[in-house]
Length: 356
Length: 258
Ligand SMILES: Nc1ncnc2c1ncn2[C@@H]1O[C@H](COP(=O)(O)OP(=O)(O)OP(=O)(O)O)[C@@H](O)[C@H]1O
Ligand SMILES: [Mg+2]
Image (cartoon, rainbow over all chains, first blue to last red):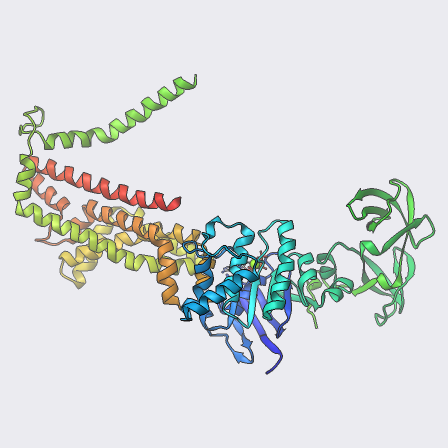
């Protein structure tokens, strides 16, 4: 059996004449936790709905374990979905909701009872069998939705922003639980979110999208440390993104100052974009660093200070464990390793560069 | 000051209610008036009602009216509900166009609809109960679509999709999930269609052909010979029936809101 469980092969889809996906490709390996990450409206749900069978693509194929399932209705696919909106059946209690799929498959009552118990255990809702779904909190409702999907033992579980409606604290707890559930049931997860922290924390592989196009795919570390373009850099956490000149290999000119870096192969005197993470900049006394600037503001964020340093027409964001004197001139340094060089987009439109 | 405002608005609403319902009240009172004269009260009687129920012509018209209302409302539901689902699934432009087309028959003057349908029918079928039924179905469909559409829009599509996702076919999902969700809209559409059909005179008049009579066309025919008090009794019964149906209809949709 091939290790690729799902493949989307040059899928295109438009709504009302507006192209949402064009020639979209995606491969998911067995047992992976893949996250689709992108801003609202970029087509994440549409991708899940095509895989789930609720939207028919205009063009392209969906292959599940090598078989073409593009024309298969949802009930014939070995895939289950946890929906973005609450989708529990309002006139059934928790137990009936979870048992729904198994009853349709005509499983024996004993099997169903065991499965429901197992699933309730898994999502930490023991004893909630008879509860009315409307009396549950948002977090509990989504747990039931997850349990309801998992009892069917799908090969692939699609989760469309399942934690989107929960408050921050609950969300963090549920993230950890989801990872635990994933490890226990051994199902492949395709997860959708627009929260980059969530994606970084949970995924084996992140696929960053914008406007229906994959911007970058990779594990959390490579996405965070080596964004391949300005969109990814900007979307994944806060960043300083500034235009610069690649003087030659290993040397980049930022704000007129030549600074050593580790990148090669861009050519000589080529305009580039540079990404430097706020936590990678170190504040030093004036003239002791590469670039000087005036401290405009210092905000204590609990674990660190967020410092804004104005240099010429660029406002640098710095995160530091030490505060800096507001209004004073300071210097800034950065290690060569922490400078990420990216090709400049050729045009505005190409800010959406295709990955590969 | 506030009390003064309350009193004024109370009087205003009372005044309007009197204007709206006084004529009907007079009608109801007259139906129990034993004097044939319309200006003197001759004492309470139920004899007009007795006469009414002994009049075969009236009973026949009543049965026709109810059959027509029931049949046209039911068939309009069968056509209108799938129609509304289909229109809802259309793209934005086509949705707007279809909804505009749906609105036209409702705004159109009855006389125009009636004559147009008659001209159309005489080419294909004899004017009879069948042609009136077709006419009533056609003017009922837009009302059904209009009362179901808000329910479709409010509906949580995820619940339908979850049903399919968990292994149910489209037919099962339709009857177990979609239909129960849409039921209040369907019922209020049905009651609206039923009362509209009972109410209609103009379109029925033009499409009925000889020999077929609903209550309204029959009353109209009788009026030419002078109004008999039975007609007051009949109108009173129609009014009570229609109000009853309407309050059941709104009761159902109000209950579902909570
Ligand atoms: N059935 C539909 N009819 C018309 N337009 C649609 C339909 N479904 C999605 N769209 C449009 O397609 C685009 C992508 O929608 P999609 O739901 O995939 O976005 P998303 O990335 O999931 O966003 P969000 O984070 O807000 O859920 C949006 O502009 C949306 O308006
Ligand atoms: Mg979405």
